[in-house]
Length: 232
Image (cartoon, rainbow, N blue to C red; front, side, top):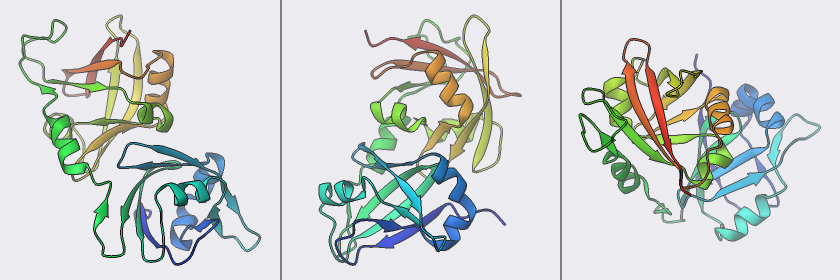
């Protein structure tokens, strides 16, 4: 059976820590202990939170959690939805006591990303006319969490894989390659993630504001040539 990838938590009192559900802990404890958790909220803020294991085998988010709770004014009745993006990175959706989501930017945010897809465009010098491509502007949260959002329609249409995961290879114009790079596909968005995406980001010194153009040059092997336009 596939491992559990998300969970809910209700806020009942002012909490100095938050317990991770037992079923999720069973599948992912080592990942989270080795890499202290990063919480990404839909307002694009990233919060590092230290995870600890208690003597009875329960996993808790502790150092950094009170600051997170205070910043978002979490109180009795708030509901948090944790979506596990891989390793110790979570996207957190926050619902108030009336179950209205706050800081909710996904469909507008991801529809905006969809508009960045460039197919058969002559306006980008590096893109060949017949190759589908898209661009991504690097944000601070992408660098801290070692993931980058990608247009979900592009990933579903052009990348070979299943409905939830495609494996791709990134290549610079000089021929150097990084792979395999995971492309995880969700309902409204997709992201590039994994150790080889992190290596690509670090070894190419990606910074906030840099624009990466991903051009699919080999559909059989999901090879994308990447051109980087520096912010400064």
